[in-house]
Image (tube, rainbow, N blue to C red; front, side, top):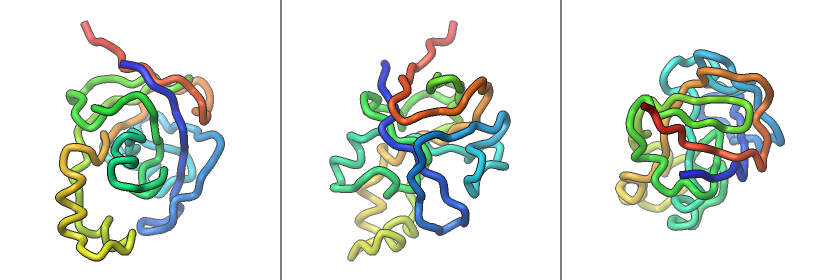
Length: 148
């Protein structure tokens, strides 16, 4: 399973508006430099596929993801400890991002609970950066690494 990065975002505060960026620098053992979750160890980077956004009529960054991909429709359901090579960085999947009601509130949807339900199984994968040799860029390839 392979894809590519179509969008990168950072947020400087917890419920802040995602800011699109052309490149992102990974922090080993954490997330993306400049992002509010950069120092976290497990819920550091959210990776969401475009297919989930398209199904819900959303645009990149709406689900507060740092990395939006195209070509990985099942990213939410990747097994824990799967690794994703994203450009010159490798991320480890910690598990699926469980949908919360406040995401609907942040987006101003009429029924946050119905919106939360619509996200089940497609909110994305929570990851931690494990290696990095250069920034991640929009357009970079994404490869799901098969573990032996």
